[in-house]
Length: 395
Image (cartoon, rainbow, N blue to C red; front, side, top):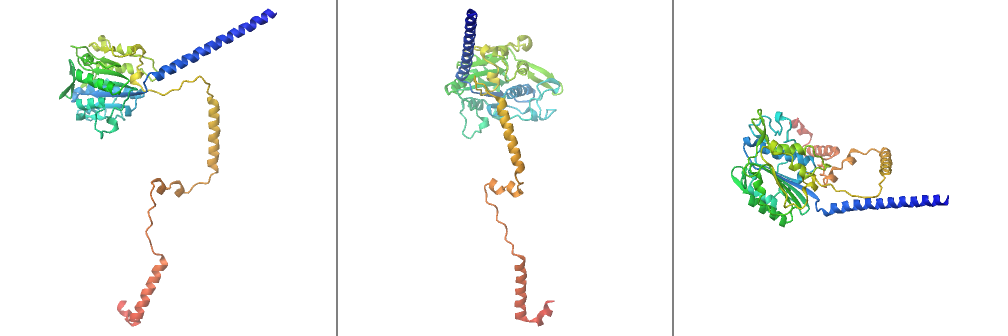
């Protein structure tokens, strides 16, 4: 009997020890996750989205950019952290059969222009100089905040570009070009000035891979729609509009992003495979040698989403008690409001106090008795001066 009792106590002690060990391991794992989160250096997201083409036949390039704009906004990046550059306004083009719209799918299924598009640089503002100034921060002091890239060394930046290009260059409005060397030097300036933590560069243009060949700054990952010597092809012609609606690479990237939500665990390796040559016709490329992390450990939302502040805790939080307290307080406030006397209109809306101005003084009007007395005085003076005999000349 005593042996059984001792054995039971020993088993209970062993189970308690195992539970304690498991609890310490779990707490240690949570602490490691928290420490890794705060060491990542990533606290905010920015996006620079650039369409470099003008003219109606380049409708697809505007649709490409607006589609990416729609996706990053849906995943949580606000307009205040997006710099949108559109070289042409297709929504207001006279050839547009549906004014104030830009469609990315045939049969006009998806309007990517929407109701709340904030274009920061438009038309002839989209130049190589302005683009480089945005990246490097070398802009005039008078430039409004919406046209600034206010990133820092904790910012993950998505840079998307689309237009017509060639081996080592991208055209801006058929009037100037940016070369891969200029772009690489701009990224180096950003790194030296601590303007980014990690940078994702995506370009959809002919021979797009040539644009990231000269990159040499750390923490840059690059994707392109085509290799050197290949064209980047368009997709989805629409007879009603008369042009192609999107480019193939961006179309399949956006189709992939539509399945992403802020809590998705898809990584960059999944993005690399969204448009194989069988779909794109061209051969998409990517470069990861400058990037410190393994792409399979980089979430899509690290660049296309926004950072949400979280707090990891091992303590138990009683939400039911808090809800009961809030409900009781709400009932007390309601009862207090019912007991209060209704306020007069003047007390409800003290306009003079709201606008911090003194009330305008009222215009002075003499009282009614004053007017009557004045007339009586005039008549008395008249009678004293002329007498009643002159009344016949008046009436």
